[in-house]
Length: 321
Ligand code: ATP
Image (cartoon, rainbow, N blue to C red; front, side, top):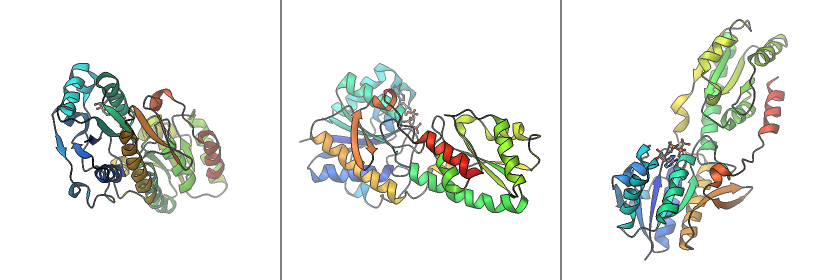
C-alpha cells in the first residue's frame, strides 16, 4: 500500500488549499494512505506529520492561505537536518511527497529526492509567478485581481486630487504582477526588475500625460525595483503633480482563490498523484498552453523562463500614454 504526504512551504498563495484537496482526494480514491505535513520543512523536521482524512480537506477549495500552514526553515539547508526530516517520512513508510511552494521549496525537495530517494513532486505555489517551467503559478491570478481591485479604488482618489500615485506590488525578481496589473488595470507607468527603469523616462512620460489633459497617474512598481517611498523622493522635483505612495503588502497574498487558480490547483494536485502512482519523482508540474507538463525539479532554477515579458512591456508603455 502506497503512502504519500502533502505539504506547503514558503509564502502562502491562494489556490494552495485547492491543490491539497485535489491531491488528497485523488490519492484516497486510489487507495493510498495520505499524510499531511504541517509547517513545511520545519514541521517535517519536528515530526508534525499526521494521517490526513477526507474531513481535513472538506470545505477548503475556496479558502485562501493553506490549511497545512507554512513556514520557513533555515536548518533545511543543512544535510544533517534534512536526514532527520527524511527519516520522519521513512519511519512511516512514506515514499512520495507533494511539495506546494516556490523555487526555494523546490531546492529543498530536490535535495530530499537526491539524498534520500523521497519521490518528490513540486506544484508551483507562489503569487509572484517567478518559477521557470510554468506559465502560471498558483495564486498569481487571484493576486493580480486583488491588485486590479485596489487600483480601481486608488484611481478614484488619485483623480479627485489630481495626484500621481505609486503603487508597490509584490514581485522580487519577476515583474509579472506589476506588468499585468498595469496593462489590465489601466496603469500609467511601470517599473519592473527585468527592465532598466530610468526615473527621467518615467517623469517624462508622466509630464506628457498631464500635457494631454490627464488628471491622475497610477504607476505600478514591482518591489524588486526598490522601495516606493525612495522612488517617490527621486520623482519629486521632476514632475509638478503631488505624489503619494501605497504599498499593497500582504493584502495581495490573501483572499478567495479565483476560478482560474482553483482549476489549475485541482489539475496539478491530481497530476501530482498520478505521477507518484507511476513511481515518478524529482519532477515539477507546470502549465504550458492548455497542457500540464513536467520537468525535472531543478528546471525551476536551471530552465528557461518563457514569458511574453518584452511584448507585454511594450504594450504597457503604449497603453500608459
Ligand atoms: P516564495 O516564492 O513564496 O518565497 P519559496 O518556496 O521560494 O516561496 P523560500 O523561503 O525561499 O520560499 O523557501 C522555503 C523553504 O525551503 C526554506 O525556508 C527552506 O526550508 C527551504 N529551502 C530554500 N532554499 C533551500 C536550499 N537551497 N536548500 C535546502 N532547502 C531550501
